[in-house]
Length: 269
Image (cartoon, rainbow, N blue to C red; front, side):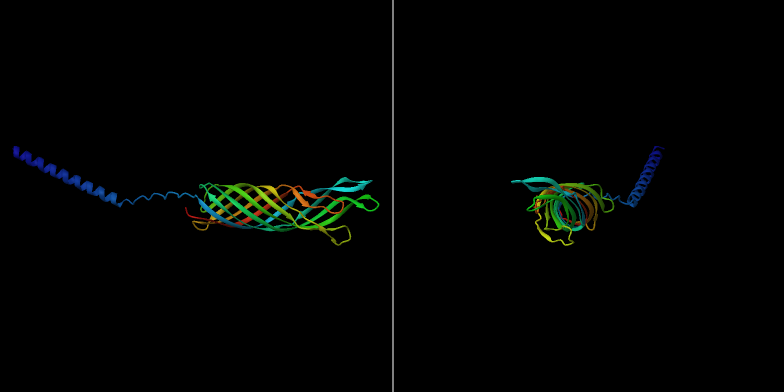
């Protein structure tokens, strides 16, 4: 009887082990059929140097100018009323380039040099004129013609907001200097001919600040297409050396609206 019980117990243990092995084998087969979960690739740091090149179109707002007038009074030359120049600058083209550094995925800086091609100036001068030898003063005016160009050197910083399917909108700001250069001015005193051609224009470096907004698009891993808008405010400065009984003219500054498109090439780390 005892041998029978031992035999039955051995059979039961063998059957249980076989069932457990079968269950484990089936479980292993199920696990093997589950597809492996692929983790998304970790983002690579965007840090690195880049070069940029831009072309664009600029609309410049001339903010008027003033100059002193002089006339003879007895033995001396006396400063008279203040003269005023109003006018408009035509649109012109912009070409530029720069070097920058992408510090993080969201912050970058660059140093840019932009040249504003010659913009035609059309204006009007109201002043006090003097006739010799009578030393008589009277109000007079001229129509003015000239040209202006500018070269800006700017240090800029940008916030890249987010990369959405390759598009990255951004905002930025910059400070620097602009060398504003006026060519010679021609004046028409009413004859219909601009026959006063010896009014020498002036050039000077002026403090400049800028605000920017735009977006870039990833053409490749290293190459981006960049398009944006920039507002530049250029401080006032000398416009020309003066003519006749009029002193040197100083404009009140320039507001420049730029629309730019260009490429940025970022070097690998």
